Image (tube, rainbow, N blue to C red; front, side, top):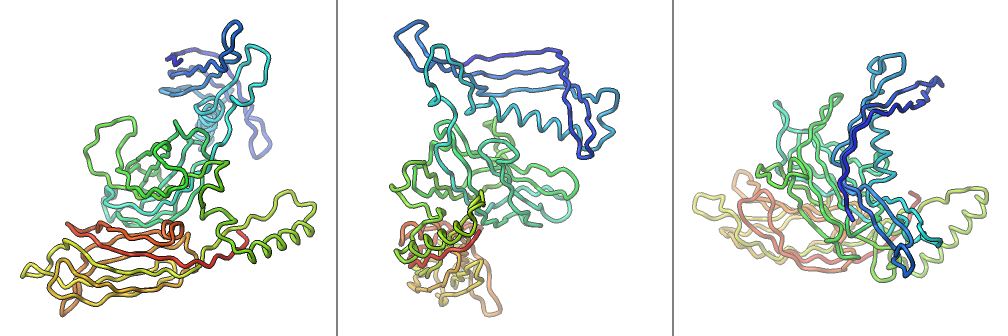
Length: 426
């Protein structure tokens, strides 16, 4: 049952704020206004009165939360940043204690209702790859974009990318991990901002993806359109797109599929023996240690890329043709290869294979650019950017990729992976 509740009151709540200097600061919270939708769950259903064993309640949707803060006997604005810090802490407390999927369970009949409490159900692996065609928020130069990614808007659970200066098509290639608590109702949120240095950042756009759309154990590669507000459905302005790679791993299904980010991924028998022996030595040497060292997997191997062909490339020459060739770059290793030039063709066929030695497959990426060869230089035609997660998982695949930054054009590639995993201390 879902009920909309509106409450306006004037209670006097005094918070005892402890400062870094050890001085207690009394802060009054008053003039509280709240509007939201509460969800009531009557579960489990039983044969005896009143027909259910417990009630779970949660704030499913928080529409408005306003309040006034005042330092008792002083001015809260006299301490820079204090108001924002306290307000953020209060909103986080509401989010963490009662906002869905968090719920409070009230037992009506005697019994064990621990199964109704909130529990993690899986891990979401998120790779923030890139964005393209972002709106320029700067008058001079270009925006300096960074992204904030989260499932629940709690400050300790929100991940922030690095800032890419002066670029409307930034490449981040950053990996984040999130705890999933209710895959059927939770969303992944991405907000892209323009960094303004010491001033407040300006929102470029935001996007969300329902976790229910993800197939457990299968990598989902997706471009999300950025909008001004997630609550407003109609937004026709082009604010850009953000490129994500997602992998949902439910707990209890670890043997059903492979998670390449897991610390025991793809170990040989020898590596398992060596890792167990190393862990045994570490545990004996650190018997009093409470937190064991985390192992971060490094996926090392050889990536074989066959540039098969391209289709419907844009014409760059006066006679309506192009002389295309392809440049392949392994970003982190900075290794480059290029194909031969095919003259006077918008549908060139290369069938050339290149091998790359990859030292860290989960954090590297392949940039494939198409250029037009001219006597006195070259013209850029478009590109596609690939992470290596899919080829690591599947071992081999063929795909037709649309060229970014081009009016038209597709690139046909065949990728193959030959692994050699190693481990290091994170």
